[in-house]
Amino acid sequence: SEALAKIGSSTNSPQWTHACNHGNPDKNGYTCGLWDLFHIMTIGVAKLNDKHPNPMTITPLQAADILRNYIQDFFACEVCRLHFLKMYDSCQFQRCDRLLDNKEELT
Image (cartoon, rainbow, N blue to C red; front, side, top):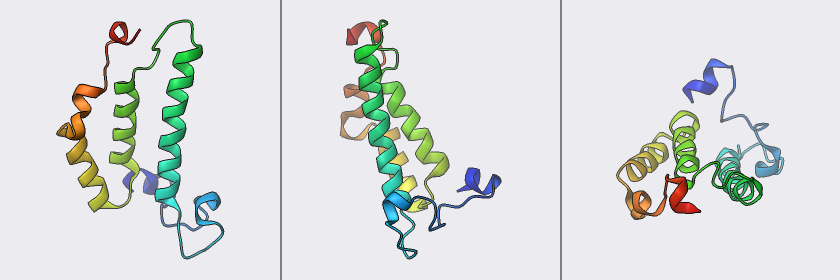
């Protein structure tokens, strides 16, 4: 949205992600790409924490906060973005109880 506009890009460009729009110019594929990114990030956090000598280098809460901030700045669907932020910030689905930030509690 605003951040993408500053660099002259758009979430409405059909070339934004070919893997998600499958070459169909009527579909921009942004939402699909966004969820793919989330999946990759969460797998990456788990893999990093499994392999790194310092356990829990990145906590689940830190990873979740990064995703939240990404949605705030880059998700073009305003209704979707505001709905997600409201749910995240009000700890819906016990998010605040389930995601720990204390590395000692996670080891």
